[in-house]
Image (tube, rainbow, N blue to C red; front, side, top):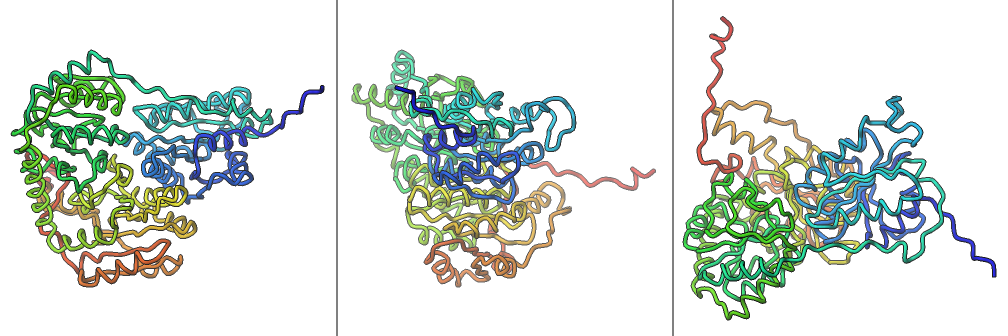
Length: 571
């Protein structure tokens, strides 16, 4: 009997088919002559929703937030050369946050590659550039090994510590015809989870069994370990989180301190505890007062990255393992011992939390009403996406309260202007997964303009989201830093700001401006009682400033920088 003829397809079609097998249902990017075989396959197959961003930087942020808010692989497709360079900042953000993202970039035809011939769209040593801003960067060098390298890239992105992986596919390889792989050949590679060493877990359990007031610090690397975290809470552990770890335990749980860890009442509370176990967290500088926050001792750590041992803080015990596997094993051992922490610990934590929350809300002045109104409007099932802005630094990274680990997304790396495209990615993720979440985006006007073109993407895609734009017509936090450290000498912080009502009208984006917080309930109802995008502009110049001034990340001392003696310098 003659052998059945195998279907011939492009490598681009194999890429699309394999991503479908990986559970990808949305991708983001900018179409180009150097990625059209892939995007043509997306369109013909009709399984993956492609979101055409207005720039590669925004597309990368969208894919990043899609990954974080859905706990799935994010995918971004760009062209080569300048386009691949445009996404670099977004990849740095995804790398900082540990987001599992696959960045597929085109590349020029292989006969001209790496020849230095100034071929159009060529970037000298592009792969090295991408390696600098990615967990790893790979190149497909022939049609025959395209699927194998693609599988390797996806597994690298999804293996802890997760992160963005860039994959170059030259355009002639994308359009090359090959046999369609079989269903078995299209299966993704299995993921390797680092198993904890039983003896190391025995030692960790023995150390914690000697404590009475232990805390568990939960980072973004433990987002998948909610069940194990709850088991330790039930043994009496107090729970604190990094900003990335918010929602692993619902933030209305009385045993959850949340991300208020840099506030004075919390540092004092830490000194009343006799151990801290840090799991899946980098103990980043802005969450530890530049590594000078006094944490309880012994300080024990669990991390899938062996390089985390002793990083930022000296470790008194370390287990290299997947967070979920290690915490489940630890809970098994402590339960077998009949361990229970001091019953007063969680009550003390609850009081500390209440004190910290009251302090923050007091410092917000009139904007405390905004926080409470947003929480009421959002309910429990929502995405909370934030840009780098004064409002996020003062309250957005701690409130609104979130109840699942995938609900909170913020610009971890500190780059401005990324929040709005991130919110688009989260909103698309909510749509393709049918989670029912409305996305709320907190942004400041200074950074907002950086990716302003993505407003058109948001309207075109009819993203179900509300932008809360805090508009003070300038770089508010930079003004505060200049006041605190530069003798009040302000420069380059006053910005020409669009009339957002007119701008929104021009692109068919519903808009409302809030000039008095008494208007807020009605405006929020208008923003949320509908599907699709909405901009709620908060006129901060009319409402007034925060009661307390935020002047950048906490530092122990602020040094005044003197004015230049211009007369002396001119002599």
